[in-house]
Image (cartoon, rainbow, N blue to C red; front, side, top):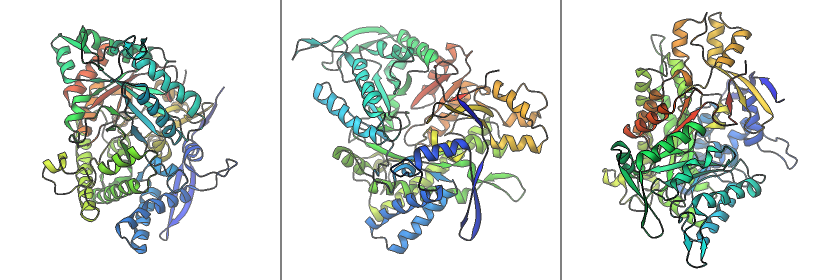
Length: 597
């Protein structure tokens, strides 16, 4: 049986600028720190504290200022600014925490590699992927250029194994060659266009949970296809190597298969590839065909992006009337510092391939996002399932996006615009300068949110009390209690161990007697929230995000397939760049779980 630990909070006391400070870390957070972020000696013993880690990262990233003529005093000032926003848990960048100031110095989590219809291209990409995976990278691939299964290969007279067959080759590399050597579990995104002849095989591949465990799958859905679904029309499947129409299908038939597979096994997801390219910041360079492994970062071939997130719940303050509100001035300061930080990571990053170095430095994409959004709403006394939550999400992300782009433009004054600026959307929109082709992204923030003890990305709370299976140690489990709910329960005299156990089983407090209604209203969890609200929150954030938004619509096990169809349709109508659903219990293994009664 796994070892289940009740989450307590260990404290780390320190002095910052003459002020006594305390950091609290849950056992889950300590596990993440020790297994992923803190330096170890050759025997695997941890040899740095969290404060050492923050100092290591701040010093390393600040040194990039020297490339632009900064003095030692100016670099030291930047280092202190970076250190403070990390030690205050206001901003974190997971790959920087892991690798900055260390031998590997690989600071990008997201990559896209190209795959052309040739053995040379396929195996070159496989080799490059293996090297990237060793550094902890997640990689996206568009398999749409590969000829379909059983197509004749003229040079040999043999038959092609098709995109899914080659995906299994990449999976084998991850599972048997890279896994034990990698700094973190390898991850991949496999994408296939909806008009590829093998689309039906692709859609149903992961109904068997054992297939492609190191891959997320997404169908690249086009406007033309969605229009055909709406009109109950047909559409053509086109062989990518010769452009010939090989089959005509009912669009509704394929859409139904997609819905059924997502309902049954949570995969594949959808990326709306035409919507992504409508917002491609450098259309004169190339078209975007793929995203990173979680779908939030559309990238060109050989492109990478450095990510970091602001922890929104850290910016709640009490106004003059005692009512809680967002500290906009402090948030603006951290946004500017975070853009500076992420731009610096591009210059001190170690890129494993020259093609990646060239593409990244020509576009200088960064992805500043948020986590702790659900916590922010709770602190403000707002239900995630409300119109007010949409207003807050719009106000917050619009503010971050605007301040972030101004910070990028200000950096460009001293450092220059990204080299592909001429011909970019920024030039066409009237900007004189812009340092980064993209500035904002909403990432899922799995382990970094565990470390920061906040809600992940823009997701609602999974449950107020739940079992978290340690993603870094499968034999270890933690009974997690949301700290804000725990405090409210104790302050209002309804906390008990028995109640926490009941919530861990039910996953919701809505039907539990003895809890005040005003508290129930605020402390809603993922399954209390209608699917439409999940998508509306995602769409609201997307309006003010350069890249894409990682968001999973969590559904209860009893959800009907019609709900999945509604989610996909609404996501498209509202301008999302993708959609992902997860029906509880539809996969054999999941990280967050309710307790068995």
